[in-house]
Amino acid sequence: MSLISVKNLGVAYGANTVLHHVDLHLEPGEIVTIVGPNGSGKTSLLRAIIGAVEPASGQISLKPGLKIGYVPQRLHIDQTLPITVERFMRLTDRVTRATCASALEAAGVPDLLKRQMSQLSGGQFQRVLLARALINKPDVLLLDEATQGLDQPGSAAFYRQIEQVRRDTGCAVLMISHELHVVMSASDRVICLNGHVCCEGTPAVVASAPEYRALFGTGTGGALALYRHDHDHDHDHDHPHSHEAAE
Image (cartoon, rainbow, N blue to C red; front, side, top):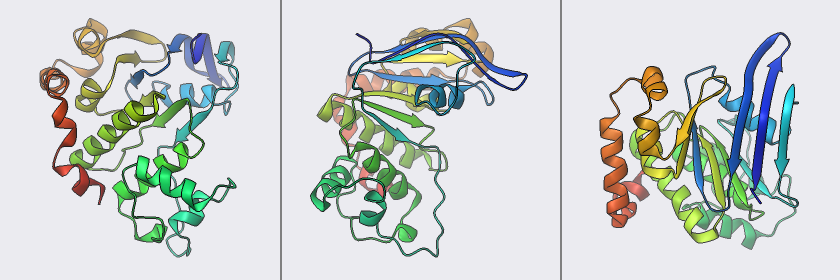
């Protein structure tokens, strides 16, 4: 059984229809990335899956007992608020310090437990959000452009961490990304969305699809080169900049 199954989904805000006839499925252990232009309904799709938006039509089915970890696009915390990473991670869950520490280690930032949230870099902040999503050992990670605002090395390091989490835990990943070069290196399947599903398939198939090229142009040859390179050289995941980017 699919972890998530979306059939003929429609989402509307008043008279404005943002999604129509969307089909999507997520299988255990796979990484699926949703790409599309601004306003294409990507975030609305994720919000519908987690129940934050009521579908206008169609059906969303989750595997019984499915545990979802959600990493938002951004989260604003008052910089004057004195709150440690540990306290932030325990705000809504009764979890132990050891559980928090384990989740931070899985997110690639094991030494941040006592740090103030206000002192974190952008990359560290996103890793803490990832750790918080991992606390309850989810079956599925949902990420809504979780690297927005990070530089390219920081984004690449974050997505390598996502791949590591998938390898270590076996969880599936459904993520939105605007970074096409990263998508091509990190995804098993890509879904191109523009109010509806324009095309989907492996990164190589989608990158050569006319619908994808109409939206993003043909300047993604480098992305495919990166995709092939990363998958041919697994040691590339241990890139020397990965730790620096998380600092």
